[in-house]
Amino acid sequence: FTLKGKVDSSFDEWICDNYYILEREGMGVLRHLSSTKELPSDDGEIPRLFEICVELWNGNIRITEDSIIEYLNNKEISGGESELFELMLRCSLIHRAFEGCCIKGEQGAMMLEGAIKSIRKLKDFDLHRIL
Image (cartoon, rainbow, N blue to C red; front, side, top):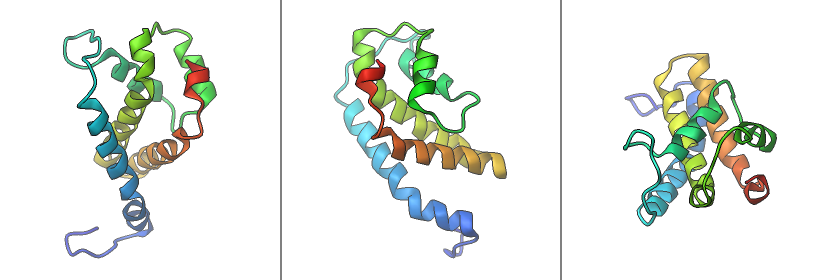
């Protein structure tokens, strides 16, 4: 929306139509995080698993089960982390959508669109098989 409250372009209309996905996922992540024990961190602040999920995005517009498997082959994930992988993956997708909103032009739009489409697709992934 513009400041006047009118839809500015087809992209603005698309994001308005898909905003509920980000809102729903964000609220779900917050609800689950509030009851989650502290995760291991390399720097004492950001959970290592979140950083792994964010790294998964580097160079990818959208993720697939195969890209997750290929990426995780080189990572050591503990049992507790594997239980929270889907939550951290959702959290990283929301973060990716935020980053897309901060970048103007086609690159930002592609990041945002890829994040929203990946959030939708997550329910189709068999993460238990992957991990």
